[in-house]
Amino acid sequence: MTTPVVKIHELVDAMDDIKVVVGEEHLDREITVSDLSRPALELTGYFSFYPQNRIQLLGKTELSFTERMTSDERYIIMKRMCQADTPAFLVSRNQEPPQELIKAAEEKGIPVLLSKRSTTRLSSNVTNFLEERLAERISQHGVLVDIYGMGVLIIGDSGIGKSETALELIQRGHRLVADDRVELYMMDERRIIGEPPEILRHLIEIRGIGVIDVVNLFGVGSIRSKKTVDLVINLEHWDKNRQYDRLGHNLDNMRFFNVDIPKLSIPVKVGRNLSIIIEIATMNIRAKEMGYDATQTFETNLNNLIQQNTLDNQQNN
Image (tube, rainbow, N blue to C red; front, side, top):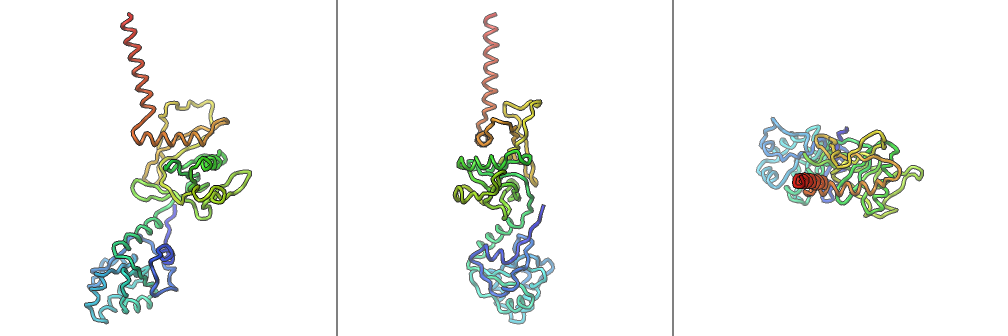
């Protein structure tokens, strides 16, 4: 599990409306928390609980308050706000940053950024970007495919046929998210997102052929950059001595972080078309989520048949 950091230049590159006012040479400063700070009490001189390791967002309210100060007062406050671990200052609505802020930030090597967006919208966009990039990640061996809108994570022993199965699913019109390694992170309390490592993006490895570029072979419609993981398919070698469930009661869970994802184990042997089986399994899980359970229907029909046979036997006797 890794806890990444985001550098200021990554934020600037990702947000096309953010411009650098000063501090171009300091864009390698690191952001370690996704929360932003809108300094209010700090502008009055109260710094006891100053969240100095956050990006400091200055909107119309904050800047209008500083206009009531003298230049010396502004400079004193801005210098106190420029701490060693303060990533950057961000000003909204294309407002002109105070010269005292620019001077204090330059002295400490802290970038000052400017955006045309409203303060609320800017705060939301930057927070969402940072939450995604700063989320704890785990690397899972497997293949992630978008099948009928559901993110299906295919796992299993090396060489069991995960990539080959994914390739056939792509040929059937489904979309590849990641092959071999899937980077997983927690979006919220219920959703796990999967995406490929940058080095493996759009690529899939087939033993005997090598690495192929899915986009070049099948087009941009054959891939997705990320997907919520809705189902885990575990491919396992067929064991003739094992009794496999034939009614659909073998649905387990696999936990990532604190989220349980439904898991279905599928035995692999010669003659089984795994891509079609996984496709049907996905459709069946989706149907269950919509309230239709074929297993329950079968059991209801079986119970009705038993009751009817019992009644017929009683009447005949």
